[in-house]
Amino acid sequence: MHGPALVGWLLVVLGAATGLLCLLRTRPGCAGGADRHAARDEGLMGLGMAAMAVPVSVLDPRPWGPPLFAVLFGAAAVRALLLARRDGRDAHHAHHAVGAGAMVYMAVAMVPGGTASHEGHMPGGAPLLTGLLLAYFAAYVLAAGVRLASVPSVAQAGGGVAGGGVAGGGVAVELPRPSAITAVGRELGAPEMAAACRVSMAIGMLAMLLTL
Image 1 (cartoon, rainbow, N blue to C red):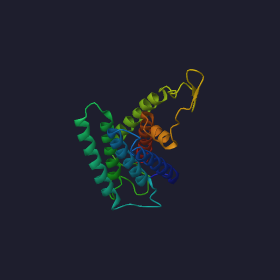
Image 2: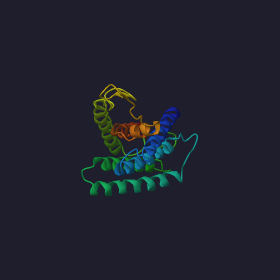
Image 3: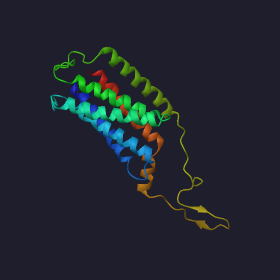
Image 4: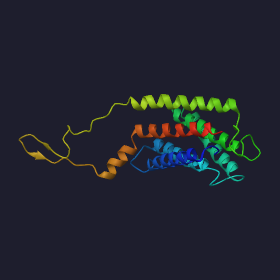
């Protein structure tokens, strides 16, 4: 992507970290079947964002990169639209389709001889479409961020005594402790973690759109 190199590297870190976190959520025991498929799609999108955000001074993917990104994210957008049509009550598929479509739009803007400047001094893409996408992702970040911040903390089960308790008759009973792997899997599979990943990727989308 065009723009300052520091912004590009920050986007690389954000996209790669979010993508890897989403892919970790695909492990068995971390999320349900549908959530696991969504996490896989979001993880691949995060890694694609990281690849597109690498500064052109380090890696210039033209001319092969933009068509490849457009085909990959175009296929992801079509798949998300089909899933949204099948599961009409799940808005995450529609959001994923918008995100994949935005990635296609940014990939097309990178095509040599297209609307994007090779030096990064002129805005690329269609201003109206860029503005609409910016408005959408800004609204999504605000709405999802408010919902995420308002989620109440859930107390751990077990009556507040970790690893032990007293049964009737004064006999101490050792309660089973969850393994570290189980605890991490439970945290990764929490709905709040999925929401945080989507907010992070929406923030990355905003930053990438601003570089056009």
